[in-house]
Length: 365
Image (cartoon, rainbow, N blue to C red):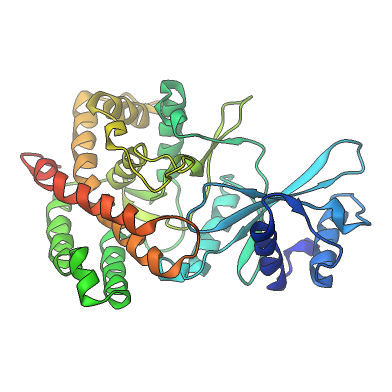
């Protein structure tokens, strides 16, 4: 086991968070905890680099995360101007409400064995150290690029076909009910009424009954396919999907619906919580993505297959609005990251009620 794979003291988390608070870009000071110095120096040593001064470690906060705080840590190598990099992920407060962290780590490690995503380099109580992927994170605009969109579709198909350990049951409905229960505990009856929480139990049951009819393809779904969780190597055009915190087995149509909904978001704008549904992909754009998705393993995509999955994804948009609406109101109570979670939730719930009749009317799976 590499020396940096030991558990790291919580002081790492506190130190990195302090760096974020004091300034947006800085160096780990010489007064840093001794264990932090030892671990970072050990990582560098394993890679053939000798670090004598702690100021050689450079901390760069990475923007766009809404659950965790993410940092790039660099240090100079012994090879001139080259730099080594690792990624430090500090878990957001209260996120254990949403998923089991041990399950997520097992998924992370299994994905690595499948050759997917970054390698896990180490863990500490409130976060982990990951391999730094030398690729760029996509932007909101990239999702509308036809070439990039086709590459993402092919990668998503590959992701869905992964054989992951554990039960292969649909998790969506159980998770929605669990989150609804958590949300009701966190809010007063008055606040619960504002968000319509009392009505959502029946809505979830109705959706489960309606959307579970007929034959559905179940796959290992990412469940959070926003542009910030998609990376692309500029030279090879290879796509990498990252961040598997919400990943589970679900209908693949749900994952497609999630990706389409994310096209309304720009988390790097001045108002990252605002969703612009004029940017939601039209029918033809969604159809092209689904055709590329079905055809990606070298298969022929029939019109019937495309239209069936297109209709299913439209229905699952409703479940996606409830999923992230509940996530938003829970996050508004448990997460301290600067993001207007409650307004985000309001927009998601508003879209649910606006789209419900239209999405379910005269469509079949």
